[in-house]
Image (cartoon, rainbow, N blue to C red; front, side):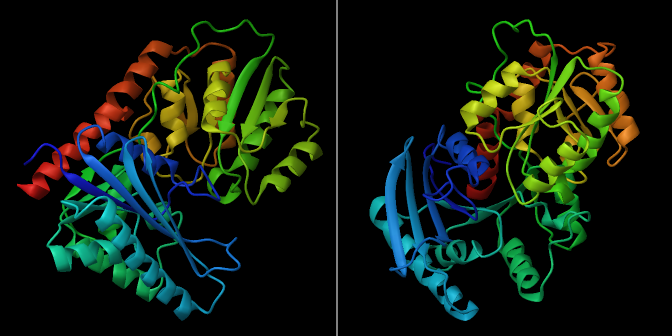
Length: 385
C-alpha cells in the first residue's frame, strides 16, 4: 500500500455554515486520518436558511483537508428534495475531481444516503469504500432504524462495503442483529488531548463541582433523572454545585423542573450550548462528570472528560461499559436513581478516589488522534492489499 492514499470522507453530519459543531466528531476522525494520508471531505446537506437559491457550494482547505460543502434548498416535496440531493452530489463530485482528484478509498460516515456518492466512485472508478457508523438508531433502546427504503439502502450499502468500522462493540452487535453483516472494526471517537487536559493545578473551591455536557434530549440523556437525584442529595449536604452545558428540545422543561424543585441557580446551573474550548475549560474546573443516559453509543463527552482527568459517573450502557471501569469512574444501572445517588455521594464524600493522570493516560492511549489514526490506517491496508 502506498503511504499517502487519497481518502474521501463522505459524512452525513459535518460542521457547516449554520452549525459549526454538527458532526465535529467526524471532523476529528478526518483530522486523525490526515496524519497519514491526504484527506478530502464532500459534505452535501440541505440548508434551511436558503431562500433565493436552489444550490450553493463552498470549497476551502481546513487544517490541510480539502473540504467541499454543497447545499440545496429543501423547500419542496420529498421527491424533488431527493432529486436536489442527487444533483448536489454530482456538483460536489465535480468539485472534488477538480480540487482533489480521484480518491483511492471512499469513507462513508453514517448511512444511508451517503452511499450514493461512494457507489458512484465504486461503479465508475472501481474505488473501494468503507463505512464508519456512529448512529445510535440501531440500538434497541433507540429504535429509530425503521422504514423499508432506509433498511433496504442500508443493507445494500453494508453488503457492498469493503469494511465497516463502528465506535462501540454494542453498535456492531446491534447492526449484526439486523443482518448487516460485514467485517467489523471497533474504532472509537477522537478526543483532542491538547484541548482537553487537566488543569495544571486544581483551584481551591468552596464547593465540589459536578458537570454534565449533553444535548437536552431527556428521552436519551435522562437529565430529569439526574435533577431528581441532585434534589435528594441537596437534603443531605450543600457543599456542591451541578452545572449543565447543552441545549436542545427539552431545555425549558429541564429548567422548569429545576425551578419546581427550588434548585435553579442554587444547586443547579444551566449554561446553554458552549464552544469546545469553553467545554474544555469547564471540565478542567469540574471535579466529576455525570452522564446518566437511558441509552447512548460512544459519547464524545466521556472521552473528553477522561482526557481532562475527570472521573465519569454514568449509566452502565453500551460504549460506556466498554471503557469505564472502577479506576475510571462509577457506572450504575440506567434509570436507577438510588444507585446514582450513592455513586455521587461516594465521590462527594471522597470514599472513591481517582487518579487524574491515569484517566488522561487511558484517553491518550485509546482516543488520541495518533491512536485512532493507526486504527484507520490498518483498515485501509486491509482494503487496498
